[in-house]
Structures are given as C-alpha cells and as structure tokens.
Amino acid sequence: MEELHPPYRAPQDTGRGHVDRGDVVPLYHQIKELIKRRVTDRVWRQGEAIPSENELAGAYDVSVGTVKKALAELVHEGILIRRQGKGTFVARPDFQRSFMRFFRYGLSRDEERIVPGSKVLASRILVPPQPVRAALRLAPRDRAIAITRVRTVREVPLVVEDLYLPQKTFRGFERRDISRALLYPIYDSEYGTPVLWAEEWLQPGVASKRAAQALGLAVGDPVMHVERIAYTFGDRPIEYRKSVGRGDRYRYHIEIR
Amino acid sequence: MEELHPPYRAPQDTGRGHVDRGDVVPLYHQIKELIKRRVTDRVWRQGEAIPSENELAGAYDVSVGTVKKALAELVHEGILIRRQGKGTFVARPDFQRSFMRFFRYGLSRDEERIVPGSKVLASRILVPPQPVRAALRLAPRDRAIAITRVRTVREVPLVVEDLYLPQKTFRGFERRDISRALLYPIYDSEYGTPVLWAEEWLQPGVASKRAAQALGLAVGDPVMHVERIAYTFGDRPIEYRKSVGRGDRYRYHIEIR
DNA sequence: CAGTGGTCTAGACCACAAG
DNA sequence: TTGTGGTCTAGACCACTGG
Image 1 (cartoon, rainbow over the protein chains, first blue to last red):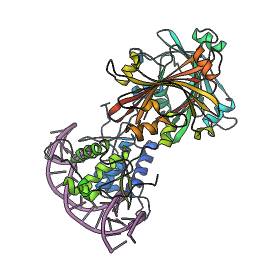
Image 2 (cartoon, each protein chain N blue to C red):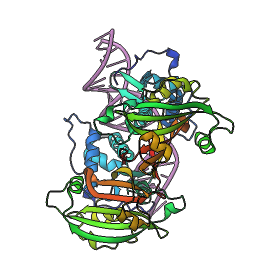
Image 3 (cartoon, rainbow over the protein chains, first blue to last red):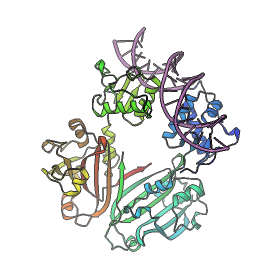
Image 4 (cartoon, protein in one colour):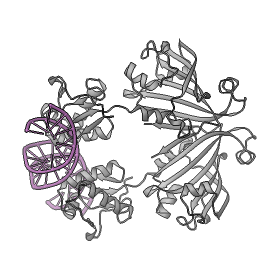
C-alpha cells in the first residue's frame, strides 16, 4: 500500500461515454458501469488515480452527489479506493493477502509467511483432457500449458499438483522459471489477468503410487484431493489445477460468512 | 420472503438514544450503531418494520439524507431490507440459503434440497474436554450439551458428528427431538441466537473403527474430518462440532472471493 | 494555498404499495 | 390519496494532502 501513482492523466481522459437520462436504469448505476468498463479495459490502471468527483460530475453532466454514490458503491465492491485529500484510485488486488486466501495448506502461523518452494516435474503444451477443456472453456482443439510440480515447505513436500493454463492467454509461460515464485502475481503483472476469485472442490482420498512417491508417503496414506478453477475479469477461467496434499500436514481453514 | 409483518408499532418506538454532534464519529455512523443496537437487543425483531426515514430523521434530529446513508449501509451489511412503498424491515436470515452455505457434503443438485435425516446416538450434559471449552469460551466448570448423531440422505449415512452447545444458552435442548429438523433455525427461533458465521477446518483421514461402523465403511477407508465453530451476535461461539464424513460421498465446494 | 474526498442539509420528483 | 423508499440536485462546511 501507499505507493499510489500520482494523479496526472491526460485531460481528455475524464469521463468518456454518456449517460442516458431517458433510461430506466439510474444515473449512478450507468456511471458505475462506465467506470467499471474503463477499469476492466485498463484505460484506468491498477494503482492509478481516476478523475476527481468534480471532473466526473462535469464530464457526465450530473451532480456531485450522484457521482459520489457511484464511487461509494465501487469502493464497496473493492474496485476503487478513495483517500481524502489525495483522490480516487483503482484498487490493486493485494497479493500478499490473496495468496494467503488461496493457498492455505494448513501451515503453522510461523510457516504461513514462507513462500513454498516448487519443483517442476514436467512442463509441456498439449490438448487437455475433456474435463479440463470444459473447466477452462476451451474450443475442442485449443491447447493448454500443462505443468506438474511439487510444492515444498522446509524441504518437506506438501502438495503435488497438475496445472493447466490456456495457451492463448499465457504464451511462453511454459519456459518461465517458477521454482521460487508465486504464480498469481505473474498471471497479473506479466499476462494482465489477475486472479479475482476461485472455486475449489475438496475430497479426501488415499495416496496413489504416484502421489505417495512424490510426497514421501506410503500408498494408502490419507491425502486431500483439491480441484481449483481460478477466474479473472468477466468470470473467465484462466487456471485449472488438481492437487494432492499430504493428509498429515494438510489442514484447510475456511470462514463462512 | 414476502411475509413481512405489518409496519404497526408503538409510536414511542421510533428512535431512542441520542446522537452527539460534538463527537468525531459521523452522525450516520452513530445512527447505524443505534439501529444495530435495537436490532441485536430485539427491540426491533426479524421481519418487522422499523420506523420510516422521516420518523428516524425526526427522532434523531438529522436530515433524511443522513438517515438514508445509515440505512443503505445496514442494507449492505444484510441487517435491514428496504421495500419501496412498504418500509424498512429487519432482515431475516434466510435459512434455506444459509443451510446450503453451511452444509455442503457434496450432494448432487437433486439431493441438495433434501433435509438430511439425523439419528441421535447420544445426548447428555457434561463438562467438555479442554479444546471444546476453549472453542466455546466456557469457564472451567461450565457444562455443555453433547450430542452424537449420524446424518443420512436417502438412508445412506453420510456423516457422524459430535456437537457441543453451551448449556447456559441452550437449556433443555438435550431433550428436543432433532431427528428431522435442522439445528440452525432452532438455535435462532427457540434460543434467540442465530448462526451468523462459522469457521471450519478440514483435514483428510482414514476411518477409525467407530467411524467405519457408523458410516458403513471399512477401517482405513478415506474420510473427511471437519471441525466447525459457529458464531452468533458479537462473535460469540455457540456451537462446536466435529464431523467425520465418508470420503466417497463427501465433496466440499467453496467459492473464494 | 488549492484541490481532494467525507459529511450533512433541505429540498425536489419519482415509482410503488395499500387503503 | 397518503406514505413509503429510490433517485437526484445544489449547495455548505469540514479534514486531509501536497505544494
């Protein structure tokens, strides 16, 4: 936080797009959509300032109160951040936190701050099996980047996982060194597709020969099977992963609100 | 939905409590707190209408816009519901949905609407073991109601679980027939303590002799261990449960946003 | 200092509900 | 018709930021 870009922009960058006073949909809602559009189109980028209330009110020819209402809701939705005296900024997904949110293989408080190591066992391009194709909404002959890796904390293998990424979105990703990096920040900064939400399916199981070998377990030991689909803007799936975590260390914590 | 009580109330029931214009905390925030207090104190009850914008504005001696802002935020927080032309109502936690949220033993779409049967194996009052006491924040000699039950869908046992409830809050609960009921609506309607959120810990394991017997599995088959603490107003824990679900049917789905 | 967002006011007009 | 909430306006005053 606190390294927000200065609010300088080209002056024609203010509003763009028009509201329709005859429409049944409220002005503040139309304005929300216009602003959202400019954020998802990356005209206004993460961390940057957007025009001030007054500028927006002028550009859309509505009162300041109406703009305030639109902005307040966008703040609530986590799309914007407002700072008194400074301006309104496009929110920056906080990857320190989002990492914590997505990766929660029951580590101790202490270990939670460690970025797990990652040993890549395979990395190749292929036409994925049907369930993966469906999850990523790929056309029948679209290719995917498939990566198999083992994730370790303090040299202890915790999880073995198969990842699939749409090749169209992630050209060249298969050649990156990901042994010491987190993937989601890379998706965001290098490929312009931040992970905004994800869904997971968890099921208990017993170690297969392959999993036992990768995790240093005996065949039949308890493991957690996790499938995840991660989504970016417009609920577009950009990652499918299938993980097997060792049961003695894998403890998954959730808050349901 | 749609069976909201009529908006009749005693006239002195309007505002109550005063705002402090000298305070640094904004008026609309003070008003939010006053309204919340009257809801949590059950002066204004679930489904009932609260005073209108104008009445509240008069009672607190602020402008309608300020009341509107307070009410809008409370709607956002799920505490109130507003209906144009009708009034503002205290929200009623939707248990059809909250049930879906808390109970997600990977049932098929079809089965999701079934209320699982429940066979109580034991129900007694005791001083709970230390971890449970800590979870429920009980004093050393406080008692708890301990219930062991098996939950079934279509006669198939899915989960065996141990429940602990603070006896102080749930006097007489141990004598209820819960074989065909959901517990959370009972906590709410009979004991005034709705479950507002919960946290869970999931870990894979293998069936113990006890679990195998209860679930019709073989010892060593995969199972899911789930611990849950459920909270009511003021983040007060009112239920601790430890469940063992059969691995072949237990599929846990989560959306992370 | 000027510019930003945060709060608050006192209205207006509207759509909707219910008698 | 009356009363409700939903939208919108055009201000006011304030606290905070940065030059």
